[in-house]
Image (tube, rainbow, N blue to C red; front, side):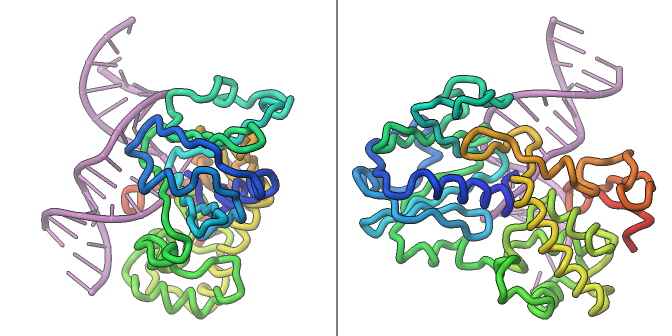
Amino acid sequence: MPELPEVDTIRLGLSKKIIGLKIKTVKLLTPTSFLGDSSKIVNKKIQQVWRRAKVLGINLENGWTVLFHLKMTGQLILIGKSKFMGGHPTLDMDSELPNKSTRVVFYLSDKSTLYFNDQRRFGWVKVVETELVSNQSLIKSLGPEPLEKNFTWQVLKQNLIRHKSQPVKVAILDQTVVSGIGNIYASECCFNAKIDPRKKVKDLTDSEFRSLHRGIQKALQDGIKHGGSSMTHFFNEEGKRGYFLDYAFVYWREGEKCRVCGQIIQKTQLAGRGTYFCLKCQK
DNA sequence: CACTTGACCTGTCCGC
DNA sequence: TGCGGACAGGTCAAGT
């Protein structure tokens, strides 16, 4: 689930609350979710929280980094002394932590606790040397960050045409083309660009590459603005949901009316994954 | 080489 | 109420 906007929501929240704290203890409830040597990060101060594509990183003062990939159902929830921030616990979050999806627990120096939960266990926590982070196979092969200046429509075009006979929506899910887009935002990007997600890359005009570029940036910015998309599992670091799906144009809206033209939103499968679009708005 | 499918896991929902 | 199958935000390996 967590795509760029969801991971960025967590990054922003965590960076306000844990920088300067030390990791006091690490508890591995599901050891297979944790890769590397946990002793490297104990009693070390947190210097920085960052995101690259869908990967979250926590840099420590001693030159080691903790990497997280949330895959489909991963969560990072920080519980301070005022449990649940005094507000109403949100849905899944009203159970006590740790719960049965909790894989790794970090106890921090101000008595707060960071829980890594992951129902399906696809996600992972990994301890690596900071200077070797960019050598990680997953990170090494990533395409450009879609919200940074070096991501131009020409770069998008150049990277996309390697997949000339693939549907556009499938091609933008390739993390080496552009990083951070997942299945929710891929449909939204195509809607914003007014492009049929089934259209082949080789059939796109330059004008369509430009609008796809803008559509990608808008979808991700809107996702961040609304605190991410919560279907079932996404909660931010405070255990609160995100609201992007209340504003999404097509994702999870099969049979509902297009917010722009009123046509009924369609669903199809592309490369085995649910794909939503408006037949009238997207050509 | 390009592209699709299956595997990794757990849980939920729907039809019979 | 139970059971089988499809499906769910991601990525990688194996197959065609």
